[in-house]
Length: 229
Image (cartoon, rainbow, N blue to C red; front, top):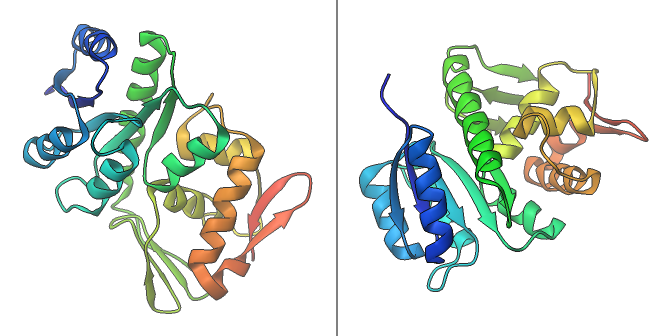
């Protein structure tokens, strides 16, 4: 099997060297970029399987790079792991809303970073296999895992990767109550440190995007969320 290709975009030389060394040691093919513009151009040209993206970059910040990658045809399906010294909850939520698959606060151990990357790549591979499944149809909401496509009342809805996973998780079992922990595990993998409030913020954003169909997502106080039967 070919090695996964990873692009690391980081402006701090010591961190860039540390991440590059450990990822190569772990068996990945690794390319690097020292700023957002260079990283964006390399990503669009080389199409890596995963991008490790620093949030605080000198020219174009990581959120803008993430947005542009998600908006591109070349990199819309690639995995993105953001890393930053900022560890506030609102920064975690914002990174996920912009399309990141995972979020690593600095300082971090190389072993944790590699474990997170492997988890994201395994989840992406599983999702690719699952795309042979039939669309999920609930009321006038259609969720197509083959195309990562959602329509509500016939209108296409643009969702982030994490929003799509959240919606799919709930819609697979209408009436079934999922705890916030189960939702986080489904979106990011087990052991991911996201607070209950971060999950609530994502649900609020998802409901807003779905418009009238947002009412299908019901809050079960003290437990979590379910999709209306």
